[in-house]
Length: 83
Image 1 (cartoon, helix red, strand yellow):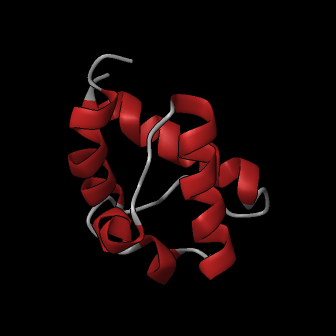
Image 2: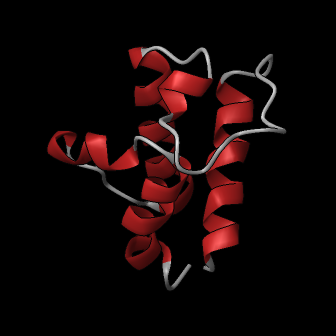
């Protein structure tokens, strides 16, 4: 999976979890929770959805690595390389 594909996956998951959020102007280098109205349960839903859709396990200590769209791409790139 390419970086743009991973970013699209994350945005798609967010649109499912928080359908009222405007994702058209998400800045890739800014924390998602600073840009969007996501709480800790929404974030857990994102992690659970990654596991359900792609079989990606994200340990709790790695949650900070999913803070921004760029960091999601960096962290998930190797995990989704063969998807």
